[in-house]
Each structure stands twice: as structure tokens, then as C-alpha cells.
Length: 146
Image 1 (cartoon, rainbow, N blue to C red):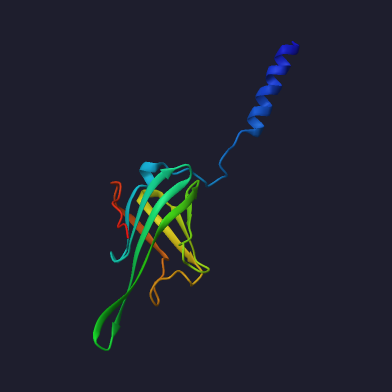
Image 2: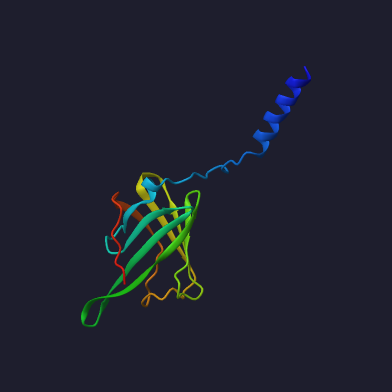
């Protein structure tokens, strides 16, 4: 009888201390993360490759189009580096950025919600990462190594 209570106690303790995801959180697999994403206008693009151990290789190629006196024009913003991921959310801080932090949340159906905090990301005038992107390719992306 004593053995039963010891086993029961061990099971309860291990269940109590076992790591669990909070409601609404889910882990993203490498297959879900890997790929190329585009914004709804089809102008800006993000490439992501899972590296393992909570790290992603990320490359952003962002575009802000506008009309100037001389016709259509665009400002661009590029950044690449390593992001950290926990559950379904990755955080990327461009290396030479001031107060910039880019949060990427992996949503259902291959969508990626991107939010930029701060203005000093090193992008062109009015270029921001804020948007919802959709996955256009599941292939491991090829990165522009500069």
C-alpha cells in the first residue's frame, strides 16, 4: 500500500512540474517556419530558415512604394541575421539597428504576422516591417549573402 502512494505521489509531482504551453501558444515546427513569405501587395518578402535550438535565419527585403512628382518611386529596407523563436513567436533585432525589434508570429494557414517596434531599423524612409505575410514557398530559402 505504501508503494502505491509513493508511485502516485511521484506521478503527481512529475505532472505538476512538467512543462506545458500556455493556452493559445503552440510550437512551430521547422517545416512550418521554413520558406519564403510575401506581403499582400506582393512587394515585400521575408525568408526564414530554422537553424534549431530556438534560432532562425531571417532575411527581410521590404518595399514602400509611393508617387513622386516624377512618377512611381520606392524606398527599400533590407535586414538579415538570426532571430530567436519560442513557441509560435520569433524576435529579430537587426544588428546595426537602434531601437528596432521585429516580432514575427506564425499563424495558421501559412501566415506570418509581423510587427515592428521602434523606428531605427536602418530601413529607407517610411519603410516598415508591419504587415501580414503569407507563405509562397515551403522550400528552404536561398539567402542573399552580402
